[in-house]
Amino acid sequence: MNLPPTVTPRAFERLAEIGAAGQGQALRVAVEGGGCSGFQYEIALDDPKEDDLVLEGHGEKVVVDAVSLPFLENAVIDFSEELIGARFVIKNPNATSSCGCGTSFSM
Image (cartoon, rainbow, N blue to C red; front, side, top):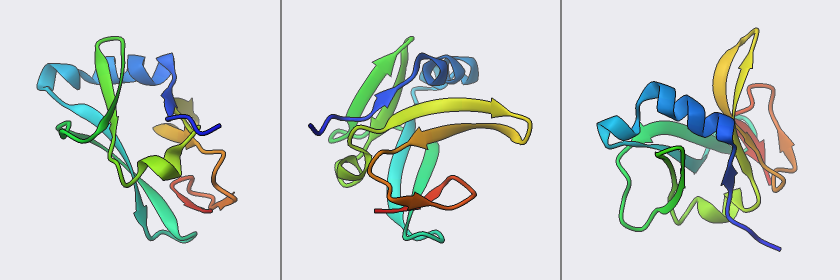
């Protein structure tokens, strides 16, 4: 069953710490061609657009454009804090392989 991506409470909490909603912005998660495995994630604060899928929680928003949505079906958007750094991460069941950087994948 194809479902839209979900966002963990930890990711929404990090967005609240950043104060994205207070600036009228959302976390945009997009998929673009490129990277070392064929596709790469683009994650940035951006203004929501009219045709975006909007995922809301903790007063914050995560948006996905219509072109990226099929690549992110059933994916989980999370926030990870590790020794090497803190970042938003995508757990994508559609990716058949990914590179070590965690931002590039193939399907």
